[in-house]
Length: 259
Image (cartoon, rainbow, N blue to C red; front, side):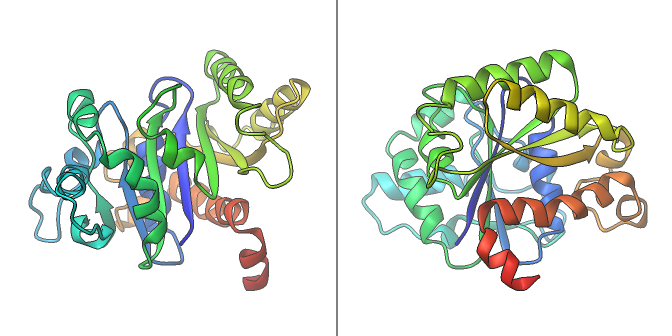
């Protein structure tokens, strides 16, 4: 199935929130894979179908144990369902546990790709050289950078894109498509265009996907919450608009046929 990685250039611009929110509005079956190498948020923020805490040992940890034991790995065996009906692969609790997964990381890209139960949205956190999640990100059908609409954040994004331009063959035929989603005020129509022009001026060939509305009060209720307040918010509407753009970035021909 389609694997799409979501990453940041620096800090915490809201990658985890964006991924969970998009998953709740995805038209196809979907899995959220929490691959942040410094420690995931899914187990902390989400609850299971009985409103209990998610099992932190079932996810990357159990998958890693299966790999080390030489067992045949099926992603389904390591997934949990949240109370909002989203299947998740719970991540590592911190950097030490992420590093201890060792041989699981190289196998993870193949495991995600072999999943036949839906698309995979991978939250790979901050992307830096040597990140354990690197093989998943680089082997994805598309990569989406999530960035705040602030000068410093955009500068870091430009620097990170410049770093991966050659190894990722950015913009060349056959390369992994890269998009940018801006977290900010959706009423500021110029922000996305201005960032796009800045990146284009630096010869960084990416697709500007649009804006994710910054709304901490709504996000506090849960990005995937079906509550009326969340569904009617600018945050939710911005994600609804973003879903087809992200899907088109990863699978342009398939989405075009649906339209």
